[in-house]
Amino acid sequence: MEKGKYKNILHKKYEAFSLEENPVKQKLLRMEIHSILRDVDMLDSEDFYIWGLTFYMSFLDKKYDSFEDKLYDTNLALEKFIKALELDSDNFLACLYVAHCFHDNKDWFKALSFYGKVNQQKLKEFQVWRYVKLIEQIGYCHFKLGNKEIGRKKFEKVLTWYKKSEIGELAVPTEMIECLDESDPIVKEIKKIEDYLK
Image 1 (cartoon, rainbow, N blue to C red):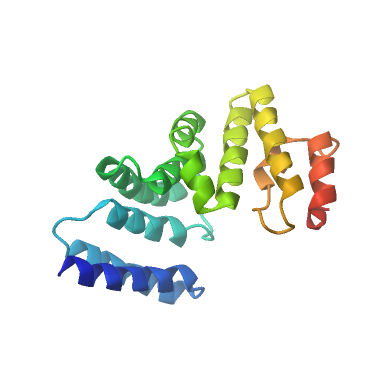
Image 2 (image 1 turned 120 degrees about the vertical axis):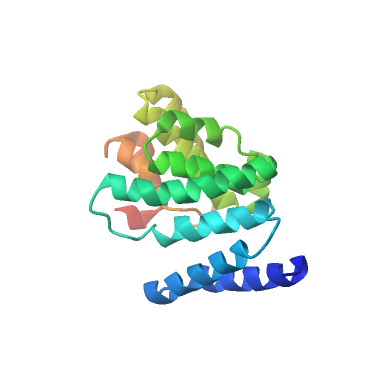
């Protein structure tokens, strides 16, 4: 299939996939996307990134019987994101999702390593909420590794962003709240700003 032609079809199918709420229809769209990608001789970084997203997004809301089952699905996505990054080291979103996969697999060291490689300026220009979430996730990984002071500094930076953003503009800071006690000044402050957290 011609590059321009398959790209147009791929983008339309992925857009439909990402908006689809019916799991059966989403699965069919994922299979169609995989079929398109398998028919292309030379896939580029973006192709592998989209392929990885079809795995990653398919299991976000899925219920698993065990961590091992989730690990299997996460690793399918991880394989594609790593390939995307190998083909284009500037693909900051692929790098972010490599970190997300390690994060989901509770491999805090590797997650931190890849979070640290994400081009934060490009991410901030792309979507501020993702940039702020990245800071939170870095803090979360540090907390999990016992580096609570470093994690706390990241959470303070997250709080600063919440103070200057519109309500609902940023993602819910679930990981930060998980790490900190309810009586913590950061949690108290963020709950004043984002009153839905009460």
